Length: 313
Ligand code: 3HC
Image 1 (cartoon, rainbow, N blue to C red):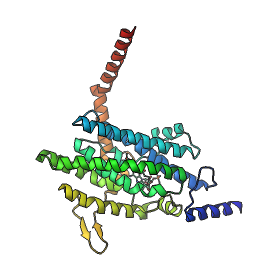
Image 2 (cartoon, protein in one colour):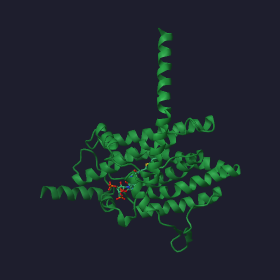
Image 3 (cartoon, helix red, strand yellow):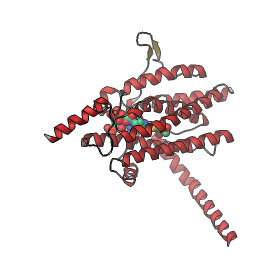
Image 4 (cartoon, rainbow, N blue to C red):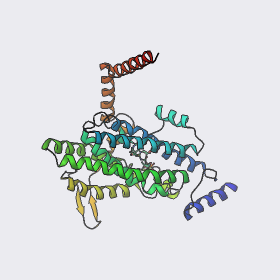
């Protein structure tokens, strides 16, 4: 009886738009749901630093290097805000990290795709951060207070990330034919994985019904994916690039684009670690390991430290 009353006043609060705070009563199913999403989100911010971090030393100019450094640093900050929000639900950061390292907690599958060229850094900013912000604007009003407040800060920075990516793509697509080709190739590889960032179709999304009822998510996966396509296709046209989708066409009746179906089989494989990009990443890691790059860097760092210590002595 008491539980039913609690549940009713909890849902009333949600319906009235009153945020749920850490010390408020909440159903255990709500707590688990929010925690699952925040944790996946936090890990995505942290793992998302890796494909971009790889390009910091190879950015083509000092300005690009500074911008990329600032962006990667922002992602770390976003991860930290989100870990703090998760901690307010009674989990420790060590537990969260353990779940990441043991593969129990997920992160966005997009970050398992490798960044092969500099144009990928442009495409990641334009498409991946573009998709992230499309999804995250609504999270500024998500029902769990600490998550919503973290998202306000995050969204401010994400819009700069999207713009810097678009700027890289603009420069490349106005450059030499090789540069334009590189930009097109990056769009070809990142387009479909970006659409998968919105999650599976609504009808196959096990979490959406509760997420919408509890106003954790305020819009469905399909609605946000459609909005992203509508916004991004004209941007590709401005760049003079072609979206790699033969089914893409404007639908006047719905005032939006009809588009093809993302490869959900690949999506599932990537999430479970068996996708083509997972294998490629692992092969690259094994290659660098065999080639000795990490060992060499560590040995050089150790020698430099020792040298400094002996000079000081
Ligand atoms: N990659 C990996 N897993 C995914 C996924 C993706 N792209 N999309 C969905 N999933 C998982 C879900 O986590 C869920 O798994 P679970 O039930 O085992 O926990 C399952 O697939 C079914 O999906 P649902 O639609 O039912 O799940 P949600 O209701 O949680 O919706 C979501 C998925 C839209 C991604 C939602 O969780 C969300 O809005 N999350 C917050 C935003 C977020 O995490 N974005 C990730 C990118 S962050 C980023 O890009 C930052 C960048 O700047 C570095």
